[in-house]
Image (cartoon, rainbow, N blue to C red; front, side):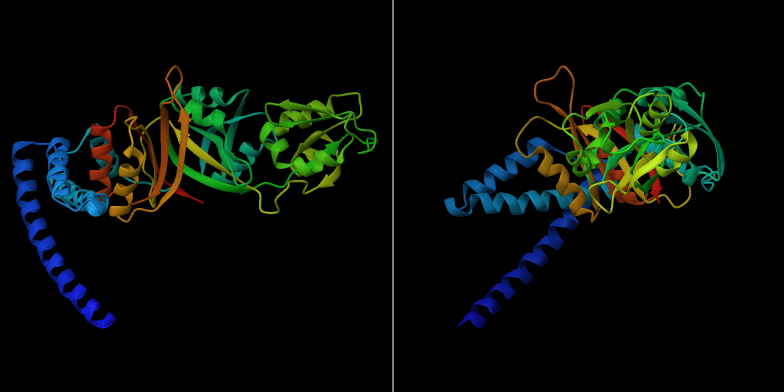
Length: 378
């Protein structure tokens, strides 16, 4: 009996597939007409009327399922039309222009802005990104953005997320304020150490300095210290090491082994991070749109309509094109009521017509949209 039912399903599926092919043939004709007339691919009014008509005639228990089926059909139709129409947008046009230029390999020598002081993990990341970087240290993350915007440094290196404690929110918030492009990213393994001046022990500590992210990554270590030990947040782990080196008391810092060597400190305990696999991801930014050879990852940010289903519809666009979404982050927009800026990282070739079409749709259809860069991650 089950096989008979499956045979009926197979016959119906064959008919559905044939009808879908017929539908897409008509969609192609529509796309050609839209291209000739300069008409936008998406027609929300038409789609809404179609869904209303079709679901109205469906049994009550099937209405929602039918809507979901046609949501997907309409999305694949739009994706097919985007490939055929490809009107472009300011962002996709700028990207095409960048792709037409000589796509050199990533440079070995450059001026680079990093936050903190010598020994900071951002500086370590810069050393791995470039063969010989000329590093300028800034007091704040915003100082790095400003150094790049003003042309004081060609590149900037910033931490953006950690595998143990998540995103560096301060950097994400600054991304909304500044104009820049990501040209490369790197995942750096971070091994924290507890450092102090010679003669200081864990038993006579009075204070521990470090960056907030590092402190969060080493919560188990902190829980083993006396409750009287004060924990003080600094702007950077290297700044914490420098502070300890210049102090007179029994204080320590959570920082890197490199900082122990730089500032003449003793390692009281090594590998004090909670997770053995503790990685921080850094982005390398520049002022102008550049797409270096081998770029295979894209980062964007945009606002979405404050309505039910808007994020799901956006995610479906990536799924329809087979684009692997590797990062989704949301941050509240200042002076707004529960509205958010969404950040997306996805794997995709910038030359791909489907990718360019999707970027055009986002650029033209979102109230706020920014292309953050096409790059390689190492």
